[in-house]
Length: 301
Image (cartoon, rainbow, N blue to C red; front, side, top):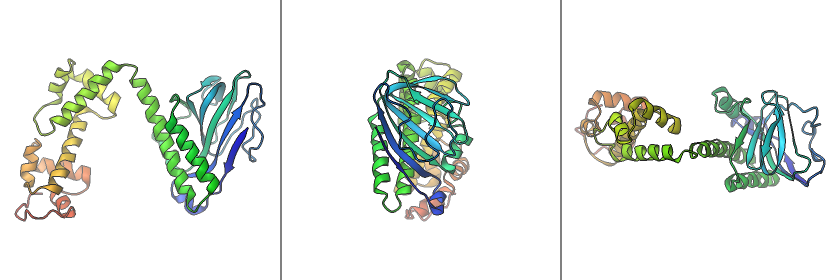
């Protein structure tokens, strides 16, 4: 059984950065022929010959087992809970095992948003398979996409683009957390360290001191922290200090120089430089933009 919808996007839709061309669901019993009939031209394929698409597709296997191959990976087993990605202009094929049920969702899309994720290494044809397990959030997003596609209301392409971006984010995060959570000890260390950094945002505590509290050397702690969070502990600490600075600038009349010292920046000028690099304007300008101007004598940058 197949339930699918094929969509049209106009030139203005494409300017949004992502358009959706197809969304649907396949459900087969063991031994049923695959692919199912009903695919639009260019989508149906012979599993022995494979195919090449001019778009990305994201497929979530809810039930069953199968085999996936592409130019970059050969005869990879896929199972329930896997998401596998198809990339434009790349040969691929996939099919359920003969004695397996098969229930899968798919969504096809294209646009510079996805091109950028490949360009910057977030997604790659060399790693097309992600395991997220049974994930109600993913199912709900596919169901929402199918509903939006069938209704095809005005500006539905923008709704569908948002769903695709959400799916990609959930997929990326879920698999990463499944991998990281296999070592609960390391997860607990990083969570505890993050809590200390947050609680001590206005103190002079150093990353070296936090590493010592965690019973680790600085280099190993920094490497582990960045592996789990994507940023170094020093940058994480600085970002929290700048967030706190924004809060103080927009809700209090504390002088900018005092904020710099309260958050333990080396000097008001150093604080102003870091703030401008992050926010795009000087602290005084940010305070004015936020409408907090009762401290008229504060001329510090």
